[in-house]
Each structure stands twice: as C-alpha cells, then as structure tokens.
Length: 153
Image (cartoon, rainbow, N blue to C red; front, top):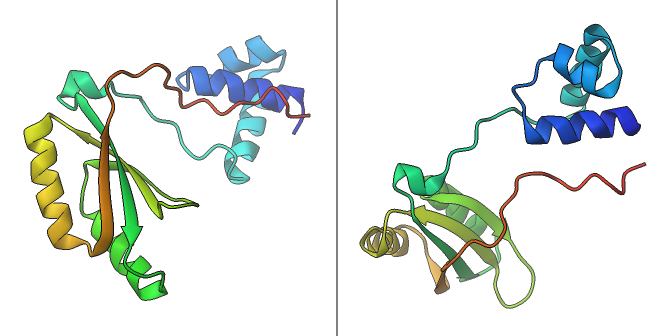
C-alpha cells in the first residue's frame, strides 16, 4: 500500500459516492488508474463495502446501550449457540468477544427504555449466560467509521 492507496481510502471513508474520475482528480491519477486501484483494494479485502450511514436518532433508535455478557462456559457449543442467538436480534449492531472480566460486549440500538426492556426480556429467554449488565449511553462525544490511516507507509 502506498500513499495514493492511503489517500484513496481516506477519501472513500469520507465520501464513498465519489466517482473514480473525482477520486483520480484528488489523488493525481486518471479515472482508469484510480478504478484499477479501487478494484485491487476491494479484491484484497481492504475495502469491504460501500454504504450510506444512517443517523440512528432520525429513524427512531435514540437509545444506545452497551451490554456486557459473561458466558456460562467457553465451549465451542456455547459460542455457536450465543452467536446464533444474537444474530436473531436486529437491535444488536455490534458484538465483540473481549478480554478481562467481560466475555462479550454488545452495542444495542433501540427506541427507548421500554424497547430496551422488551429486548432484554427476549434476549434473556433466547441466550444462556451467567451475567448481563447494561450501560446506557447518555451522550455521544465522538463517533466515526473511519479507520486511522496516518501511520501507514
């Protein structure tokens, strides 16, 4: 990956709707050369997709909860059941396996506390775990989907 690739990634993370001609103008390449580089970045799996970002509040998902999960055990069978279980909840927009006291962390987007309570009840019936702790986000201070690229050579 060179500086032009990094610049292309930075531009696409800011506005994925830019045409290859517009991208090329910004990085000093022809549209064809730019298109080839973007195709290569996609083929390598560096560019995983191009999406539109939706403001959760504007579509009725104004409450964000971070949910800490402690596993009942750490067997492959439990992990498979847990993974299948959380896939059934569209409210869960991120799920991570973590280190330390908490085994898994979920980011959950819901309308309000009543909707969260409904989610909680359904989740506790569907997934078996030994601990479940909710943390509600009071204010979002920073949010980005952009991956830092400044230190890439």
